[in-house]
Image (cartoon, rainbow, N blue to C red; front, side, top):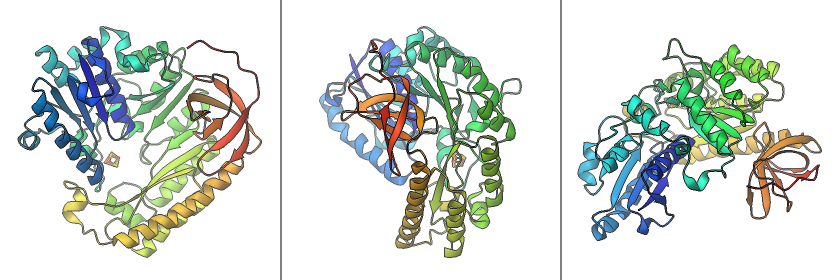
Length: 445
Ligand code: SF4
């Protein structure tokens, strides 16, 4: 019996698919890359943009002939397209889908295949027992002993409700995972060779706020750093309202926590921020960046920006431009605003910035950021930095610095899973090249 998983979207979905894959393998299924030869097909979907949702519908439609040819085929639709609030409309539109699973929940599929043993992650105790049966469940067979860096969800859902965002409606309210489950999962990952974990949450800094007697993110980081075998710890995504001093101190004092922070600003104008219901001002964001830099001078900071939000004037956009120009952050993930059915912005605001203007603003920020990151990365030239190598791509080993910069090294040595000091020989805006500084002893994988 074989399974095939199609995953779209964020790292949370990637981690969820790993969990589903390992659960299916626990039930006796093996992975196949060929969708036509699968007995179970899982479609793990994303709806953060309309284009991602349309892609999922397209894929789903393409499965109908397979189901007609093989009525025993089990099709599982999972993730944000299903959401947490029922799926009657989807069931009517795609009657050939057998199982609907909310995001991060392999329960309904396992239940379907085992005829009712597990219902959903809401039935947390049963699910935990199922996953506790075998430590190796944490990763599918194909990734065991091979994955260097893994993502671990620690907070599900989001209760913030920014006006442009569909996620709270699809992933539900914020729920922190029990600390014991997270630490055991990371121990299991370390036992399978994982060297780096990235803790995930829509607002990861809010970890533990719904568990009165549990640790917060700073406390969790301390526990994760104690796991033998884990060399690097990262976390994302942060929110300016919850990124406090305790967390900054934890990053500064824990050597395994990497100096890289994903802290979206979204806009640099206070009125636009208010319309987005982000809950902070551009000055507050500037203050946090200053605080991070005063305590962690070599920290890299990534941000997210949306241009062309409803009502954004050219003047307001230039505020965003100015913040980016002043702060000189390492990464800016840029997006042009687009309407998402079901969001407050789509219901109450008019998408009044033209596509051409959105593109103009996007390009201006893109050019600015390219200049900024080119300058920042040039400072690495000639420096020696420790790089954790993950895989060989087109003859070159690919790894990351503590600050999350992409580094390539050409060598015949096997660098997989090793943290090695390298000397940077070339820098560009998106990656760097380096030479090894030492002979690497061959390792058995
Ligand atoms: S914080 Fe805002 S943007 Fe992030 S997931 Fe929650 S609602 Fe969406």
